[in-house]
Length: 83
Image 1 (cartoon, rainbow, N blue to C red):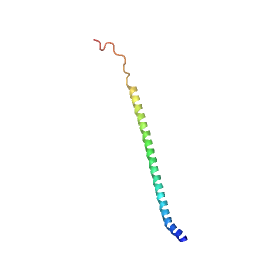
Image 2: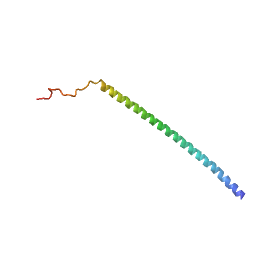
Image 3: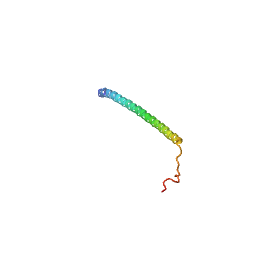
Image 4: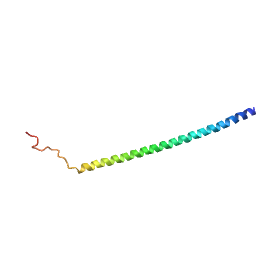
């Protein structure tokens, strides 16, 4: 009986070591993927922020340009267009 237990342990211990190594590699790979994903999300947030700044600058330029234009007349000239 003891010989059988010893034989089983001789077979199972190396398999257990291999399983532990596989799980460690899998966790390491998963951790690397999470870091890459976090970097991608940070880049996306940064790009959205930069786009928002550019849009705000564009709106400010439009407001400044409109402010420099002379005011258009809204009332029609009295003699124009009459027959």
